[in-house]
Length: 355
View (cartoon, rainbow, N blue to C red):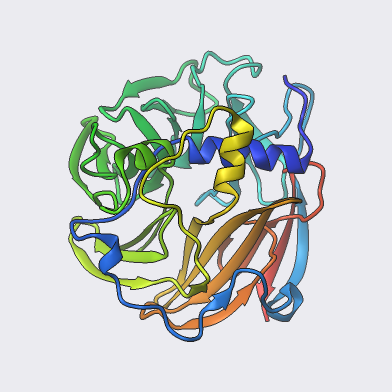
């Protein structure tokens, strides 16, 4: 078990991992062809107060018994009722109840024989098992507490950044398929262990070095629709689950500061972090109603990573924007799960509802 960094150092490490992780973005037409943003764009340095949009209703403290500590985590809402944590630093997957009680833990230090490393996310599959995705491309299926060993399958992706549940045996993988990259979203069948189709080409304006080094894509699903945005663009692209592009629009953030088309020569993590801190990045999407999405963005500052959230509809109109904002982890049944601001550890959350 490793020591836990402070919130600021953990977030800096998290940003480096994300930005040096796995790339996705764009689509068959270049992202730069999207329509212009509306005049009602939200400023990245200002916004309405958090309390004017949300009312805090409760808090959650994730249990940490001996041998378990939350360090650098990706949280997912568990359809079973609680939360699933993938901890990149500890190489563990943990299942928590709604109230934060630890129900199961997998990986090193848990007494199980699960082979987990470089985790990016873990999700619940339709059959009740847990699927853990690792950066190098492997997928690990964890049957449950009663099974002695998980099973690992290597995907053809050489960088895997995220995974999203679709229907039945199908999941959506976010990752690099080749060099140069041709597609970044991939529908994977967990029954046959095969990619059924791939789509979402990288934005044409960026060189392969940018895509391969900073490959994060935010993606959300609602019914038979998908929304995706490459981290360095303010363009939201809508697909059906067959991978056919349906529409695209600009995310109303102003100014949206993006890098140039090539990657500069940087020789240290500090230089890379300073370079990234100049830009606005799209970090996550939450499709909370048929015509409403939340976009979570981030920008580096001298005091650490600043988070922001905007609410927009599916034709590009902004409802509200909050900046700075706490980090949004997930949404379930109208309840928003946030990382508690100022906490010394990522195991302290707060729950809120829209006013």
